[in-house]
Amino acid sequence: MTKAPFSGEGERASDLLGLIDSDVCGPMNTQARGGFQYFITFTDDCSRYGYIYLMRHKSEALEKFKEFKNEVQNQHGKSIKALRSDQGGEYLRQDFDELLK
Image (cartoon, rainbow, N blue to C red; front, side):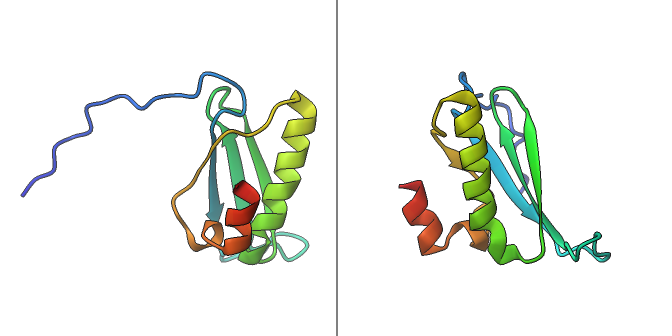
């Protein structure tokens, strides 16, 4: 059984902070200075502007999201409307869910 190619065009956010794409990557084979083995990315879907935060442990994802959220909301005077991820375990924690509500 073959899969049909994706033929549609994905919808893009029409406003800053309307949709944020995020992903956690790691552990890396080689640690960065300071013992960082992971990083988390946040990309604004409208502007395609990206932010990268280094992490020592995957469990720091919530704290880095809070840091990112405070930074961009203060900078733009707007709230994040939606967060899109690959449904990794770091985004499925209850405290992360409560913050997003």
